[in-house]
Amino acid sequence: MAVVKENVRVAALGDIHHGKNAVSGSLQPLFAQITEDADILVLCGDLTDYGHPDEARALAREITSSVRIPCVAVLGNHDFESGQQAEISKILSDAGVVMLDGDSTEVHGIGFAGVKGFCGGFGRRALGPWGEDIIKHFVREAVDEALKLESALARLRTERLVAVLHYSPIQGTVEGEPREIFPFLGCSRLEEPIGRFPVSVVFHGHAHHGQAEGCTAANVPVYNVSASLMREMFPDRPFRLVDIDTRPAQSRSDAVNRRAGSDRRGVDRIEVTK
Ligand SMILES: [Fe+2]
Ligand SMILES: [Fe+2]
Image 1 (cartoon, rainbow, N blue to C red):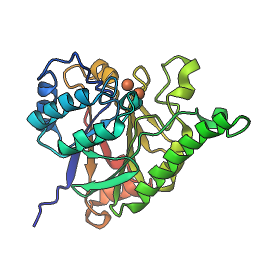
Image 2 (tube, helix red, strand yellow; image 1 turned 90 degrees about the horizontal axis):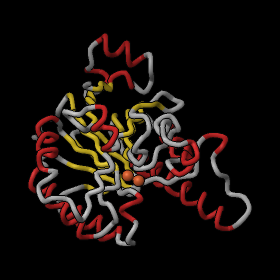
Image 3 (cartoon, rainbow, N blue to C red; image 1 turned 180 degrees about the vertical axis):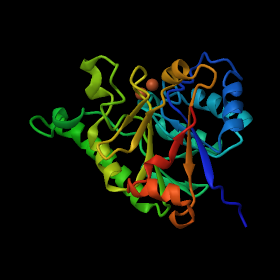
């Protein structure tokens, strides 16, 4: 019988942008450190620089040689640049990465739902489906990604849910970027499904110069794990670590239950380990 971990440590990182000039083995120290520190690796898109299969193959070699823990990932916009995103997903799947595109998976009793997401802006300023067809198509793409995320979350039966995105679902974690590009960094339509399910934590990338931490309107923690931000925040450990307590509610301590009771999502039980 498989041993169920009571505390699962998730490492999250986005925007690796593994390019054609990357030196072979350059990611191995990072992946070895992640393997040492965490139980699961979450990769939040822009895995490659130009979406070339050769870049994905090089990244796959780094992963297979150094990552010894389960890995889940979504693609980012850079992975679509060459129109070979399906091939990139296959290469990484063959390397053991669980690629999520409106899909869900369970690891160590935690449910992961992932989509790339899309842009369109936030809140009342978000672009609406009005006017030219091309604007309607643009907005439709964001709506479709939000629906895919909702379907993926709905399929999970675990008590703990994690949403994995490339684009941001909230404005808070893109703050710091030029305001003019906020609408291209994410879309609050992605926040809607997160609000309809008991999501414990959200990871995304894409906003390389945004804020590393934020939360949804319902107080779900949102972490922007873009590699450049992670290097800035944690120079000795350039990725985000989050602890998730997977014990069922009835077996938690009284103290923990009181805290969880104060927040129906139990987000206070997500501990960021520095
Ligand atoms: Fe990126
Ligand atoms: Fe991106």
